[in-house]
Image (tube, rainbow, N blue to C red; front, side, top):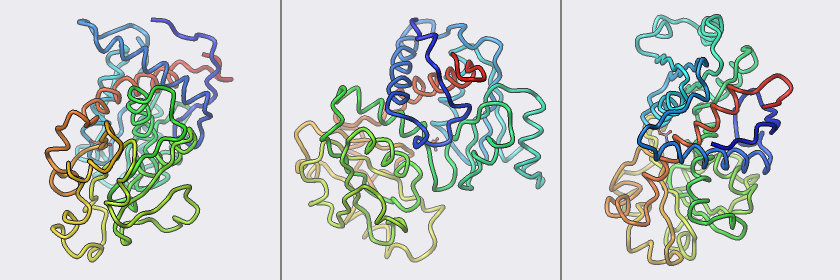
Length: 318
Ligand code: CP
């Protein structure tokens, strides 16, 4: 596999996409495309990160992010170690700082953290020598999800991001995926439209570079792609929605609604999906759905992230 061995990757950590330049985004996506080739081989393993140690510190539930980081690390021959809230001393009340310092003492190369508190990844990054990857922190950011979404769209759109329109539909207020995707995709020239009940729009939306549309029929008209978001019932206060049935009636994406989008428009969902609530089951499984392509892209993208952080030398020379 060919790498640009002399590319200067300047970042010790990946905390949010806002820290990445356009050149860095495309370098990472190019690298992910190289790694994707390995994922298609009969023997999906290369020695690139042999001897490196990666800790997966997931204090919140995850299927896709945790497993794909684990698979990514192992395919690059790194040793991966998992820590969850249940079964760790977090459950006995150990603080995030003490947990982090304990992990640091074992000298890992990269720690991937998911945590319910916004800022948890930055808190670790400021205290640890090793690279820290934000695997999702509260409502704040989910940079590798936005990068893998961008990778998936690039497979369909090529380099033509400018002038495309993406509709993000659903629970925007509680979504770190929405925040990271708005930053990343608008930086590449994509126009973002948001559609959500007013109670599920975030505070401070006036400063977001987006168009907001309360009516789903108008919102979906003419878009190049729709990203449905899960209703995050576990993060919501009571009373934000009259009922789930009413929500589904007004905001569930259906094949009929997709007829209003551009021909060939794609459907994304970061998962996990609530079929029949924010996306119809027929669309989740439709040929236009990129949902499983996103999962595959997640492995390749996270291989690129681990490679860049685990092989980075002080000063940023790869
Ligand atoms: N998209 C996403 O973060 O999924 P998981 O919660 O399963 O990791």
